[in-house]
Image 1 (cartoon, rainbow, N blue to C red):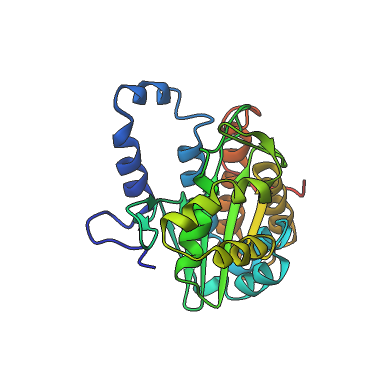
Image 2 (cartoon, helix red, strand yellow):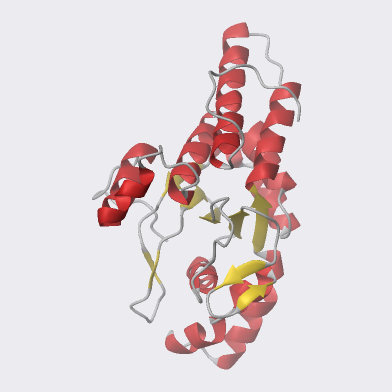
Length: 260
């Protein structure tokens, strides 16, 4: 699975600009700074998270997620060496012309994490086969550890187009059988993949990420005051970013965070 393309910038800001360039006239809705927009929130939050000490912060976020416990713990343990990319290169499902672009990817030598994020706005929904496509693309070229991490505005159930509110695992399974058939997979492959959903799919809410980062920052210590202050500023910015996008207060100057 090739997540990096030389045709597009590798920086988070560059990838966000490229993604937003497809908005057309709808770009006007971002004149308020993109408040509540899932792409803007995801880019800002994951950029800050990538700058924080990985095993402490990204590792704690993975540990606080729900589902796929064994895979999460193994990926979290090696997160310091991970590469994080926003809006990675489109992945083709083998045997089809169907392309998949996750909101982010976390890449390690022996693991792959695709991140699909929804914003905090009420009524946000997934396309009918969106989660199934991402799951199938992830499993088409399996690493030793594979994870589909879904970031939500509120805990499941999730809203799926044409299906209403369903459990997250059922949302991932929606359309999976048809996609397996389109890609030329035998019927038994669908059954095998469906059974792998609970150990491959995990979720967490933006509020939980915010609380984890605040708690980890409160417990973080470093003998170098410059490094310690830098960590507190980054963590504070991440907490403030999530609060602002979720409609809590207005942006404030960075300051050391306290435990939530």
